[in-house]
Amino acid sequence: MPSPHPIDVHVGLRIRHRRRFLGVTQEKLGAAAGLSFQMIQRYEDGSNSVPASCLFEFARVLDVPPSFFFEGPRRRALYTRENMELIRATQRE
Image 1 (spheres, rainbow, N blue to C red):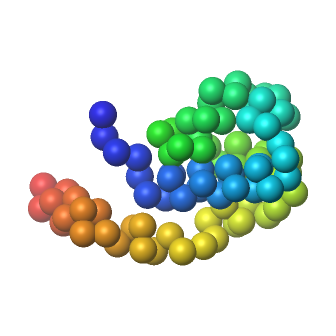
Image 2: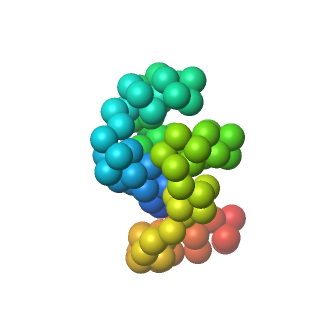
């Protein structure tokens, strides 16, 4: 199974941090967005990409702009040696 994309991991962490900050459970966030708590878990750990429609719903429920989920120090996560090697390898194919 391939590793999650660093952006998916970053977005998931932002969802988790905001949800916990507000004291919202995965069950409550899922119910508000029409999703199971298991799906929220997959989004939060980055194993599933969050669709744009869900990001907008999460932003509404968690009272932040959608851009909130992309803010922060993700560049370091994107430009790791492993990620750069993967990018170079896929560009050669």
